[in-house]
Length: 348
Image (cartoon, rainbow, N blue to C red; front, side):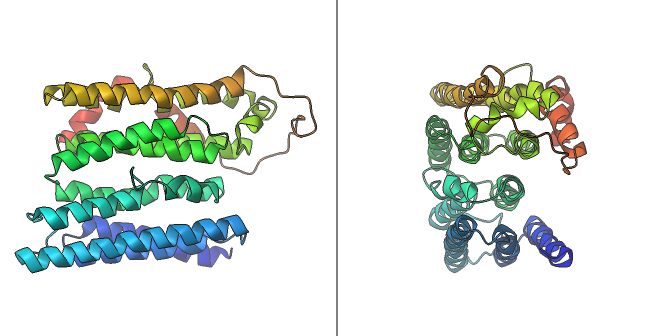
């Protein structure tokens, strides 16, 4: 793609998200989301591969449906209450539709089935944008709304953590595994949204860091399935040693960064007298942990199969910048001791 065209599209992507961040009016927020969607579509379809075009079409139809629901619900809210303000969602009917529309936009269960299929059709760079940047604008709207629909949010959160763990168990494609991982992490954020928006923000921040380091690791190794992970030790032995730690951080094991949001969220749910919800969430985290352990096992404890497809690749010089990977890996592994500082910064 022409660098000028790519720069324009990335500028449009950033501008759309920024408009949604800054808006307090539903029409302006909707316009930002539409700009965001229209800017990323050419980036998704740039390789002209049939799978990429199919995934782009699915993504466009899903986002258009969610945007139409959002516009319908905000218009209904203005008709019922006379308010266009995002923070003045007092009527339960439009509030519920908007929550479901934003859930469809970010891929929460039970409206999640488009996400693994779409992510599988893209390369890892586009998948990284879809899994990180594209979650920011809908989450900004959810945080502004402060939705008072406790039952709906808990159902969405628990079903996402359960399906995100369950769906990733039998996957061999890394992009689908990361899609189900994304669904499970988003479920944790939605669970705690109504009780502690600060914790939702913290969980979102740690999710962005951990997902970035995972995608960049797989991109450096040019790995797209579990079999290709087992020959990654020939390309970058040091990174192969660190990758299981990154995956276990995604799974939420101490003393890694990923333990921090899960620990604080379970603590907050217990304080809110929801022990059953906290127990279910903790048990569904074990499902996710299983497939992260499976990836770690395939990467570090198995030798490559000695057939034509699994032969050791040439150690070609890679052109990927390693600084972003280095920074995100350090943050993925070592942020847990800074938990009090991060809570203080987010609460201030």
